[in-house]
Image 1 (cartoon, rainbow, N blue to C red):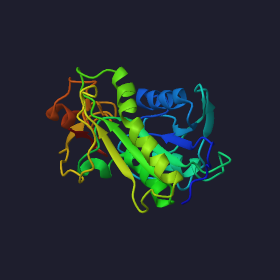
Image 2 (image 1 turned 120 degrees about the vertical axis):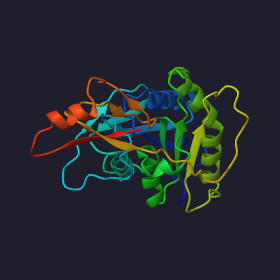
Image 3 (image 1 turned 120 degrees about the horizontal axis):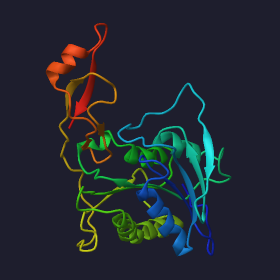
Length: 254
């Protein structure tokens, strides 16, 4: 696809994610892009967290879309998945033009192993790739107890040279076709050792199952592919005892 911007114009960048439109990773990325005054920034992101939904799409139901105030950007919160958001954002049904680049992120947690097949963040970029639009997914290796929200800004800044280089290549028609980039930023962003194009890793998050007595029991799987525990009072034996006779409840265990 040829770039839609010409000399002197600012390129249009569409931002999405899977952590939701209020997530600090997305807000930090958008704020940085806006602050450079080098891009027209559009946002089309899920209205709530949609982590680990992979490339699922909404097929039968209409999407609810609500404009959101994000300084310097034109932003909409969407009831659908990351792939839905990208598809809508590049369709010209919501925005008047097709973006030059789609960026999905910054995700809270890495996406550098086989578990990218679960990732809504990667799917947000992949949907643009399917449609012939250059795209990048960005993830920060968040470590609970060590990382903080300011690290998302550092992660976005670390990716800015790559984003700028991609847009320069698009402008001169040198951006390679049939690919999109998946960028993983290390936990210690300040001391990162540079950039390297590499092969997809083979790591995999092993998950199991546990029987529970309610849908809220056992915590939620976060976008970092870890478990947020909100209950520790039940045991497997208690679950078996209290579960309804006509059905059983199971939740993933990381």
